[in-house]
Length: 147
Image (cartoon, rainbow, N blue to C red; front, top):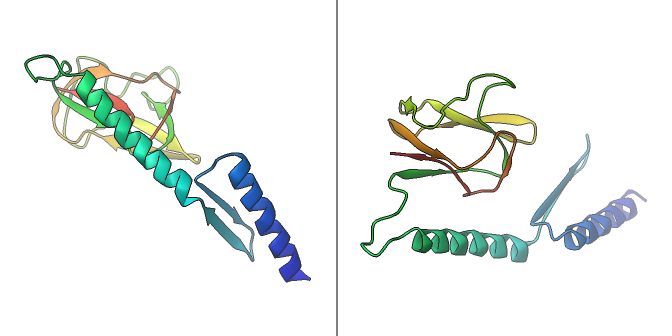
């Protein structure tokens, strides 16, 4: 009986995965864990991110070959929600024009109720912030530019 229930659950999860065009779906209880992934969706997403990154790099170039936005673009390392400050009504971690140290938190990306600090990869001055507080972000999406 239990195998039949699990089989029906798996069928419903696969159906849910397909209907919502998800790349991955995970279901867990105290005695059961099911993880289903759709490699076609994951591959399409990876290709889409790569293509959009290449397009952005080409469109940001001027005729001399220099980028319009000189500096290091800091991309989001994950899908989530970007927060520019540690809490509501607090000062931003790294407002435009501020200097940051290597390893200093420049913003937080919340993913699955976990706050993930995003550190500055190097010391520099914040030239641009490409997201707003509380904005959903995608993997690879530009968050901030350091000069």
